[in-house]
Image (cartoon, rainbow over all chains, first blue to last red; front, side):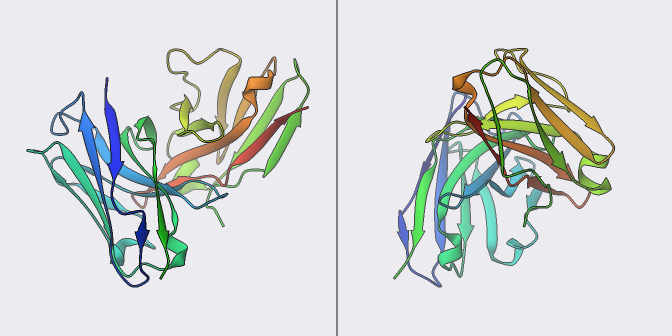
Length: 118
Length: 109
């Protein structure tokens, strides 16, 4: 059973970098799947952020691409989200997830709320 | 404004059939599979339909998906109170990015 768990600061100051970690258990991230991030602003809908394969193929939401890095450490079985120059618009519940075949997402973390505020 | 367009709300009475639509374009729905997700309050979304019309194991056959051209639909028959949730369509895009619809809040009256 694949399990995902997000971790990271719940509060980030404007203009700083939002950094999250997704710990994976029950499956080796180097074995398959795309591993990625989705966010949901409070009271709003889902937004795909990006995903990557262990081989290094990475896909980013175009409007976030200039600020975004998704990476992974196969030795720790973790992957990461770094979003720099954050503003209040980046306040959201951030989910890590497994992707297969495009937008098929069958495993989700519980989500972690990140608030951007001074 | 989402690339995939869904009605913000839908409703039905128990036992009824409800259809939720999702409209996109050639580069997303037209050329790629459509997926549907159910999000109950306070929980992560759950995959309901994959590859336009396939149900993962454990999803009741009351849920069905279809696609025609650049539009897709999710049908829920025999509506039940526990179906009250937010529903999202999703599709990959030829520009190598993913999209979700804006979501439809389903109310069971």
